[in-house]
Length: 85
Image 1: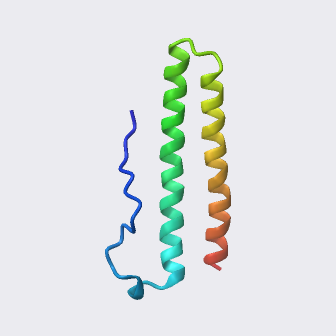
Image 2: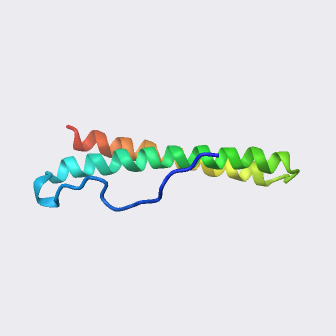
């Protein structure tokens, strides 16, 4: 089973004033993208477990949640592209 900490405070210990806003946004978006990938992986693992435990619709729905989570990353990547111009 995949596990990660849900520590949602700013992982960079520098003060806000020392990091330009666009750089901070990039770091945050990169973090959210990775976070979503981790979550999607966990949802898929649990979908497999649900299927192995004869839950009929649960695996299908969890796989759908995983897909939608990854679709959010498409938008986050678009935002990254706008910031990186």
